[in-house]
Image (cartoon, rainbow over all chains, first blue to last red):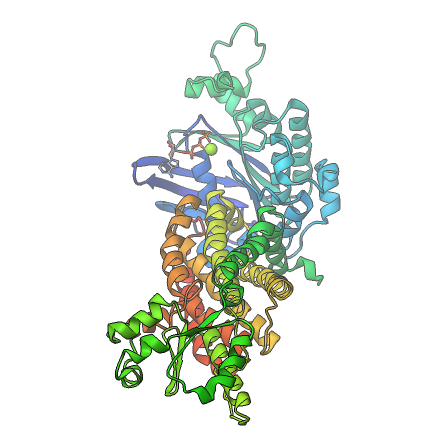
Length: 264
Length: 365
Ligand SMILES: Nc1ncnc2c1ncn2[C@@H]1O[C@H](COP(=O)(O)OP(=O)(O)OP(=O)(O)O)[C@@H](O)[C@H]1O
Ligand SMILES: [Mg+2]
């Protein structure tokens, strides 16, 4: 992408994805099909879509874990091929499936991850912020699923990254912990950090995301701010009787025709 | 910069905790080698043999009687008179000096050895034994010395084995070598494949970690652990079996380090592409079994056919065992074990190169 506006000093977007395509071999699956989007610095961006839509694949390509079949990814205007290490020192991530060494203490795990980054966060204050302080000396294997998830979030934030990738960070969290998580994300945004997340909770996307795309079968089928999408898609449509105003959930169901929360 | 904020140190600590927090480690690292050594020493150590040394004597004139009687009082020696049997064989002296192999001895002569169960035969023309062991060599020395004393001669005796390497002395370094190999082959390959299986490498790939920090930190943690383990084992062997390192302990531990490096890098090379930790153990066995049996852990390789010995000498465990024994039992120095050091370095470098070239860090290739 060439700069179009000459003389205009616009900062490079946090993430810029253009015509991304990913075809898995064996079995042959087109997981991502011509996906393009842009994440502004300091904003929270959501990737929504039903199971198997290609969200995790897209995130992993952006994070440099997978190679795209075609298309381009730039992070703060930089390319992985040339500046991978620099990019990685500015980003943090939680994968959809995570594990840590069972016989490692929470504090030790964070010390390990902190050591990778040039300017890591102070571990005690991070533990405090994520409500992990009482668990600091516990072995990872002795934590509950939700507690472990918070530890993973902590490993993603310990490097004080400018850009955070979160693949279904709140799946399996209780409602109050999820509220805590929303507060953490708002905090990050207020500190100028950029966030890319996937979620199956529409109220979460509505609450957190400044803009989002909805993908299905690897293709972007909608995109924009939550309000604009609701307005555009639900205008003139009949709403379920009990609901006064349309929510993102209605958009999701209308577009993908599948109820996700019914599975949970 | 604080030391603990170095990724190398962090990976080192991670590796060390990985072993130290495993309860079974105490058993496999300390009790098992001690236990096996104990069993083998009990089974094979000549010093524990309940039977005394049976010395056949024959063909001596009456003038020799005094020293023969000195011998019979010597501790641990039983004299067996084979005069009659021997005199029935006309040219036994010639046959004995000619033949070196029990099979080619005249059958009457062979019978003396096997029927009478004698360990050695003493005649006026010499001392003959079909079992050239260190223990029998020591017994010969004792017998010859007794003979000389009885005759009032000052016979100059050159003992065959000055230090008197016991079976335990011989066995202990091999046990340390084997422990090092197992730790590297199985411990490292399992650990690395299970890290990959758990997706930990993928997680690291999201960070600016350095692969070399991971590998070096891990290998260093293993080496430090193995040195500590060897120091403890040396202490245990000393207390239990009287084992001693006659050469430089620093050189001994240096060899332990190098052996650990070669073994761990072999484990890493094995783990390069394996996706399932269960498979790693199977592949490690391909290296483990030949080394365990052919690298002189349980039995000596000196009597292997030369072509086989020249192959097994290049096994990393053979090199390690030979070098450890040379330093511990013969007190040799660096220069004397340079071939073995070379073999270990080649193994380490080759495995490192393979690991660097092949290792799967969980990224899509
Ligand atoms: N390694 C792989 N090889 C082949 N196909 C794959 C592979 N990984 C994912 N897929 C397929 O690619 C498609 C997209 O998968 P992806 O994990 O990106 O979906 P997702 O949107 O994250 O789904 P979910 O909401 O369930 O996490 C799916 O059809 C999946 O079966
Ligand atoms: Mg997913």
